[in-house]
Length: 265
Image (cartoon, rainbow, N blue to C red; front, side):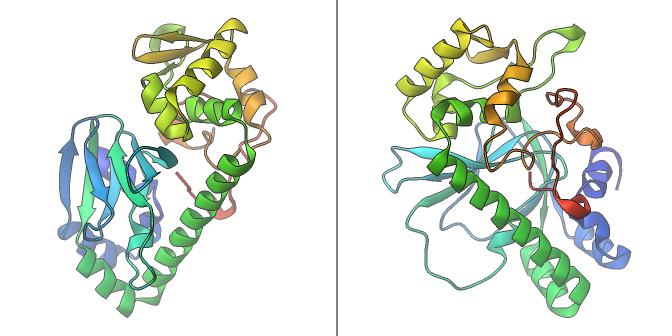
């Protein structure tokens, strides 16, 4: 392992996999670079397990007709995608599940058959995979609660904070998403997001620009999302070096990160 791959592995739950088992998995893995907007997985595809080495990815649900979407998870360096797909059985989803790159992204794909065989023969590996699947499920439940009980304004603020990157030279953080992409993330119509963005613009909290949004007052945006179920599970952890390009938490606020170093993406 070297460079970005090593840092990604060490910041994921894979760092707890016994060294011989980890070496075996890495030997059978492949690195894939994908451009922005690439769809990495759709319902019906064979299960895939991938470590995000660099970039930003979203997991989304879509109506069968594909007319409406909602983002249920973001993943970045150190997140492992596809753990919940390793199991077999269960009824088919009546919605479409998809994974899409929101930026140029590098992934490390593991051989699924090898991972399953290793889990069957190594209780520790099986336990680590089970723990990660549980964390992923808890994060999904928090997202469902946000969609059910949060306002469009709250959900929009949370998504903006979750994907914003800190600009160089002390400039305001920027979200490199269009208004349609934000609407897909929030799970509502573009016109609704446009009105919410306009309200936040009039309040001096942000400035919509062509193909992106500039965040002018992140502390007030954080205040918007504190009541959401996903607050603290999706925002940057100041102790995690992999989040240093993300919008920092305001002084006095806690990320309320899950115990035992759990990563929920």
